Image 1 (cartoon, one colour):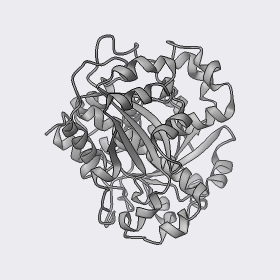
Image 2 (cartoon, rainbow over the protein chains, first blue to last red; image 1 turned 60 degrees about the vertical axis):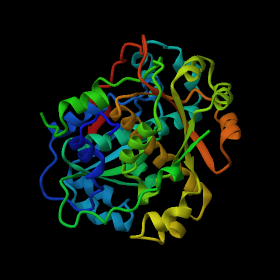
Image 3 (spheres, rainbow over the protein chains, first blue to last red; image 1 turned 90 degrees about the vertical axis):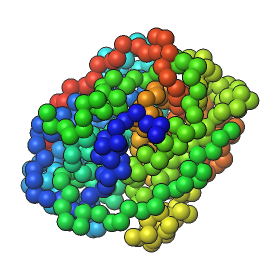
Image 4 (tube, chains in turn orange, red; image 1 turned 90 degrees about the horizontal axis):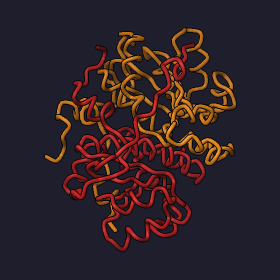
Length: 196
Length: 196
């Protein structure tokens, strides 16, 4: 066994965790979200730019506005999940860079003065952080249900602004009945990894 | 404490793990990479598309070809890390979709028949998998050194093809002397998370 991580943790985060499509009624508390954030905020990003922003959709009114932008097949679960979060990339993250990466404060001007370069970096690094957030949800004993079947242009207009690119809508909660499909197969090592 | 994950695992994966800039000489074995892949392959992607591809740069000749595409500040660590991996997104992942997501084989034609939609999905989902891979490297007791300071166009020409978009070059190994800067500050909960 070549891993250091204990096998219960491996199961919790990867082997037994699954993307849930149904949820119980048990609420997801503010304390749980804070504990998740306090853990996953340490996940690495380029120049510590940490561009991920999270909108927790807690009110019934906001949930209704969200659901209408979801693909039909995603609407029932988005309606019934205990908590739904909109994950977006902040394209103006560079404003915080001198504070976030004091070792090299020139990075803000040197690499991120142009918006297209910023957007590309924000999407990549916010996507890394979205994955850390999924791992954090599982670390809290909850199931994540990430979805990209979304009218993102409509969603952005409804909840965000031009400086925030929505990436994923995430259901969060305890898995309910028949919460998932049988797990799909994974690619073999040699189909993914080549050596040069 | 709202997390289920034990605190040693929290430390290993997030709290004590750091992006390493120097490494010891200890090799990273094929068994370690296989164990990492066997764990992180289960991380979720949309329609189980799993578009991440990994090129392990093991030969001295390939390492030399890689280093010349790195930003100057990244060259010394890329030269000396025990192992370097090129992480890319396979824009033709849809060919495998009917096998990877048997619950909905129509997805291939319905959502991914156009290349721009495929590329966007491949980059997002391969980025999620890149983060799972970072977590997996840490789960093996190793340090990851992800880098985007790379001439990606030149790198793609040198090692990949038009169907593979390079995203990150990753140093892998045991951290060496003075392996990292002091950890940068993280954004406060309220700067990242809003509730509606």
